[in-house]
Structure formats: structure tokens, C-alpha cells
Length: 259
Image 1 (cartoon, rainbow, N blue to C red):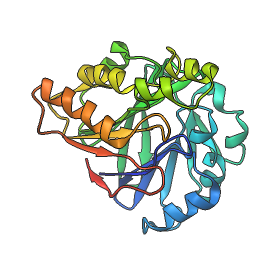
Image 2: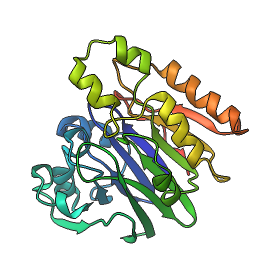
Image 3: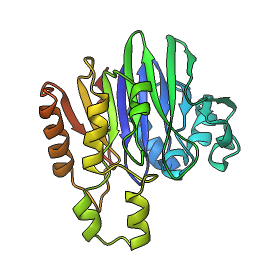
Image 4: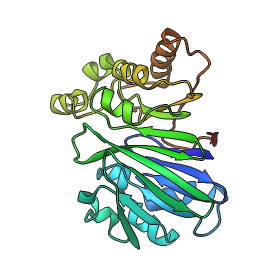
């Protein structure tokens, strides 16, 4: 099982979990042309994508979900309230994801077990996911307004964790955003600061974790260096210097991560 983060940030989010020759995509927030360009580099066959999971309705997560699902003949999975979202309108099939439950996605090369957790974010509903295949687990957790122990417990013990490190508090305070946007980003239904991400990381580090991907970094209110420093500091405090830390990119896909 291989995780490829195609993009992560305010301009678009998409992460592909490859299972043999097939795949499960979490979010499709890139524009159609950019999505096609990133997809072309994966060397996947036509209709290799089997499922598209959408965390929430903000366009940086949902923009191409319906069109891509139609092109790939894939099923879109989302919270019931999202099925009528305009970004999903072209999907050939839909399936509901229920927060707090574990559900099965049938793929050509096995079954993926999905756990969904409801997240505090200003686009209701927003979900975080844990995807498991043959005992290997990936957690995708962004757009989380504040650290949440219940979310961590439900999406527990990943081997690979993609966790939001959105902003540095000092940079946001001194930055160019208007006050209303600063309050939205830093509010309990906004995004995680580096410091808050440290707290969520502490709740989620389990014995299986080997790779931490820092996601959804703000281009104006954070830097990779600050995010990595915060993550490394927390992992050292937890005695987990063995965990590899990678920064997800906005303008290019990461190399695949073996789960």
C-alpha cells in the first residue's frame, strides 16, 4: 500500500492510496487540468481509481471530485449532507460515509476499511479518515479547528499520519490577512497552528507510526522550517525520534510513501 500526496494546501488537496493497480483518492481539490497533470505522472491505467472520499465541501478539497469520478468510473463517498454539493454533481455513483462508523470499500485487490471522524471546522460536516488495508493504516487529518482527543482515539495508531500544520501564530498575527480572516483561521472551527498540531500529534502517536506528513501549510502564515521544527520538537519530547517527517507540497506530488 502506497500513499502519494498529490497536493496539500489552500490551493488544493488530494492524496492517493494505491492498492496494487487500483486506488482510493482522499479529496480532489485541484482544478481539472492540474489534477490530470498530477495523475499522468502516476502511471496508473485507465479507470484505475476505484473510490473518491471527500472530507468536506470547501472547493480546495472537493473541486474535481465529481468530474474525476466520472472520468474514472469511481464511486464518490462523502457525508450524506454533501451528496447534493455541486462539485460532486457529475459522479456516476455515491455512497454515504457516517461519522463514528467503520465501513468497507471493496477494491479489485482487497478491502479498505474506512473510519470517519467528525471534525470541528467551519464547513459542516467535515470528516477525518483512517484507511486500513491488510493491517496497514493511513490517517488523513486536516481542517481541524482545535486538538481533539476523541478524534485521535477514533483514528488511532496509524502507520502514516498526514496532519495539518497550518500556521505559525506569530506569522498569522503579523501577516497580511484582515482581522476577520485571522480570527477565522485561528478559531476553534478554523485550522491547527503548529503549536496545536503538536498537541494533536501527542494524542495520536502510537507504536505503529513511522512517517509523519505535515500538511495544509499556509503559504503566507507558515514555513516548512517552522513546521518541521515544531513536529521534530514534539516527537523528541515523546521519545519518537525514529519517526520520519515529510512536508507535503502545494505545487508538486510527493514521492510515494510505503505504508
